[in-house]
Image (tube, rainbow, N blue to C red):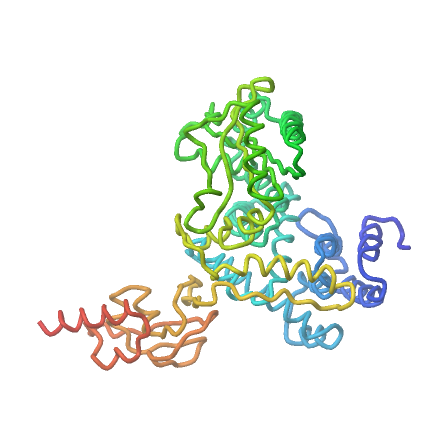
Length: 487
């Protein structure tokens, strides 16, 4: 038992979470980092060892393996060749790989002038083992929890990343509670006027856990009347989600009209089979007022991507005048809508409103399967990588200034040049990839840094360079500019 200092309490907690057969390894890791962090504090004056212990505890609670926790303890150490070799010898190559994964993520999230959606795709693509992604999400959450102490010159950047990168990564990994806390806290600091106005409006409408409980009680009563066994999920819409839905309508944010949304409170009824969905629907129709023009039966008529559910706004006058959103579906539909081809994550990743069913987004389900396996395997093994190939049909290369450029598999330096700008592609003469001389025909892989050398007197590429191009777009541009050059 450790002495009951703040650090001692954290150490006792982490020892209680780790499997007994790994306690010795964990104590050795903590002893090592205590020496490395001696005298070092965070920006809020908290000892660095406490910060890394808190994140490691969160990851163990989530069910990740011991090596992820050890890498977490080490991740604030400034690495060099000597220390990296020391880590490999004392802990393992696997721990060092997790730390290398963090470096790759940091490189992407620090990228200059890159759309956050592209950064997210790069992070998921480069992280064939997702443990470093989990680590960085929890690291960001711990930063936002102590936001008041963050130096002023770092606050805006940390908030932007929390909202636009790490919150979305948390959604992709189905860390729903973590996503909500991360976004709500970051939103309250990033846009305080909008946050307060939405909070005040929700209070004035009486939206609270107490109101949600009343609706749940009403729904449970109707389900009981039907004689069907069903489970119910419920939520109050997050303030940040409300903001994102309303921002195109609201200008001043003094008195936002949040009542225009029917899903401020939403409940989901999950039933054994399709027939039971309709039986419960009948009971609800007898006791509530359904907004018929917004009623959708996607069980009888599924969406093109395979999404199935009955969903509609409904009002229960005995509780309030507010419309709430109800969704009725089976357990199988719930799983497919949440993790399968019809999932919201697959919809967001595809960027297609009416995406058709595809196996391209099977990784949504695979990630959850791997996490479930990790909770079991991590009791027996120090290392359980969470393997998943995501966006593996794309390549993400960097400009010398750090901007990410998205390419297709097989794309070359010449494709990269044209992706930067048609004029750069036309004038491209040679290149350097990762600091070494490279030909225009060299294929690129994710993480490559590409510097294009141009000939200012050149107006277009020659016919032979068509062989150097992989992209149809690049080839079309080369042909077009050759024709114009001939004229």
